[in-house]
Length: 230
Image (cartoon, rainbow, N blue to C red; front, top):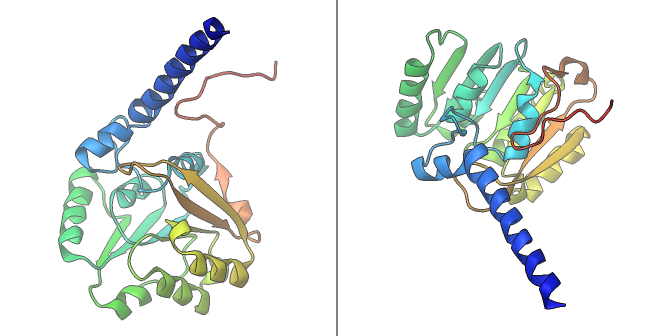
């Protein structure tokens, strides 16, 4: 009996190592941990969302959509390459200066990116003052930012709301669920830098879902390229 168990154990160890290598190398998690930067395997900026959420969003066409971010970072650079325009608000001056420099150095044309520094809590929250297609809550004062969005006239115009670390904000997420009643998809998993899993939640407005179109066929970073339909 042990003769059969040992080979299975070795095969399981081999497969587990293969899975770990895929996460470390193909997703670029080791590179992001080493540099403490949200980057992919090629060193390109990615959001600090879970990998399943990033892969989902990377399949969509945002070229005609406007994006607003509460909180900035490599996500700002990532969205700037994909969206019609990006407005990001930051409350930390040192972080703002760092990301501002990255925006200027990585983009030949940064006219589509509006980057705001609002150290005051009230001004930071109120910086979402006009309609955007995609709103991302991934910075400070998250509950207050959500409440501001829900109480404004812009909520109905939003097609997608992205809330990162949603597993840390159960009460806030429940407020969004009850207030909007939108389709909710919770992307649990690993992501850049962190050694633990977390959740990035995407809410989709059913009335505006027609504006969210796929840009390409489905493909996972560490998946097999295979067409099983033939």
